[in-house]
Image 1 (cartoon, helix red, strand yellow):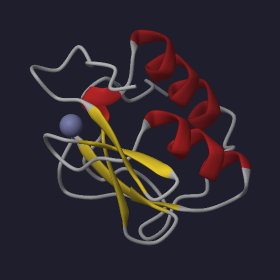
Image 2 (tube, helix red, strand yellow):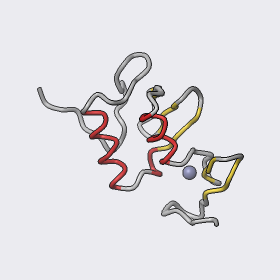
Image 3 (cartoon, helix red, strand yellow):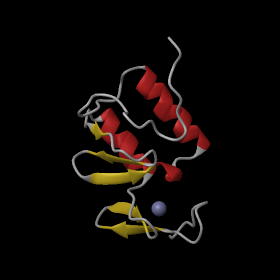
Image 4 (cartoon, protein in one colour):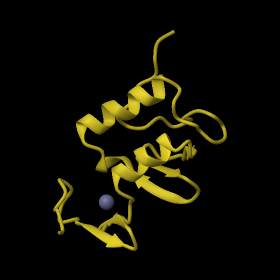
Length: 101
Ligand SMILES: [Zn+2]
């Protein structure tokens, strides 16, 4: 069952009904999208590689595939992501750039 990720020797291990990274403890990307679609909020952090979602569940962006990064950006641009205080990424995720307005 343990699919080795593209990230070193890390594996996805089941903890309860969910998968977590054996290296950093991050939740699986699919959980992030599931939470966004369920209207759960995301909490920005001062790290470009980390968010909390649905409370204190943590996610490290390095686990996003290229496709998942694009999907996340599209959801963000569609304002489909509910962001907790301060309502925007004060430190933007490393794979995103600010739109020039
Ligand atoms: Zn990890």
